[in-house]
Length: 173
Length: 354
Image (cartoon, rainbow over all chains, first blue to last red):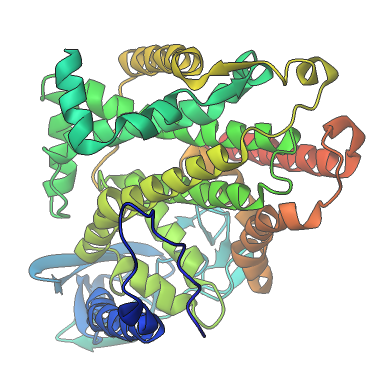
């Protein structure tokens, strides 16, 4: 593509260097390539830098709940918070969460439900009278087993893996 | 004085362009109509947000473990005039959303988006969404319950986009969960990326406005005044200045009467806190309730996409020459429908959480 002609300079100023002007197209292309390379040299590492460790998958781990299996009363839905040591970027923090623990037979079999609503991540509340979970954000409702009754949640409440060690209940987060 | 001015002008060559800018002819129908101050008023509010924001940054500590919350608490309750600066920034953000919306409605009803001003409408739409992004990122910064949960819900909405949702959500949060990475990202976006983008777009927006001049008058009374002009400075600037002072007085009064709120510190385990967004996102928050299960993406993606898309496409769809809103019932009725829907769902949302 030929570069468009330059308007003539005012007579008292001087003239364009025709020899240099002939190379204008080449110089424009050279600028495009070099500037593009420079931009890419900044942009590629820049984007990688921005992504950072965002996409890392956190390894699961076992966390002890603050209750002994023997203390679980049959048919009671117990709300419990757990604490897990976690590293948030450079800082050691305590990650906390809410689970609902129930045991129909008083300590032989358990159900531990993640209290996080599957709709948009609010914490659900247990309504003892109605025997169901209610999300305070958008009124999603779940049965005591965590199945969706009504409202916007797309999935049931997450059932967490459990194990018992020395009479203590552990969950996998 | 004059000699100093001439000395500077000889070395900078600024007086010509500045004089042209200030002497720009404004039609009398524009000068006489206070609705045309809405754009300038938005710019004044942006300047107020920039000044108060820079001041707040001198004290704010963007770290999750007490730093952010305690520094905002300190600004709000112990720092001399901290309540005023944070209050102006807090209420100023609401003013910004209201003024941008009114400015857009004015442009809409005066058909000022029509040829050849399509791109000016588009930079305006972009600025509108940047203002909403300002609101969304700024909401998290105090790291209180409101900000934490609104951000949790907001990023989950982004996460429900098919295929790329999870990637977007992780990029917004800077990881799997809300934490330090999220706060750092929102802070950098709020104080560096967004202000720089908005400032650049405002320059383009105003440059385009100057290039095309004001859109034609729509009433016969205004058309009769379209051949008479006043200079931009001081006549028009004084209008904006008076409106700006009025707004500042209102914001100071609101801040004085009701200090900017600060909730309890963010607590990921609380289930007695009912998350709710800032009032201008309330209608959308309420809308999310009506789309169960598989229909969720309708509310989280299709509706925002449709709203944003129709705003972008407006000047390319409405191609008629007609500029009077009472003669083009389709666009007028559509806008009234949207306004009614937004008001109704805002009221429903407010009532549900009152």
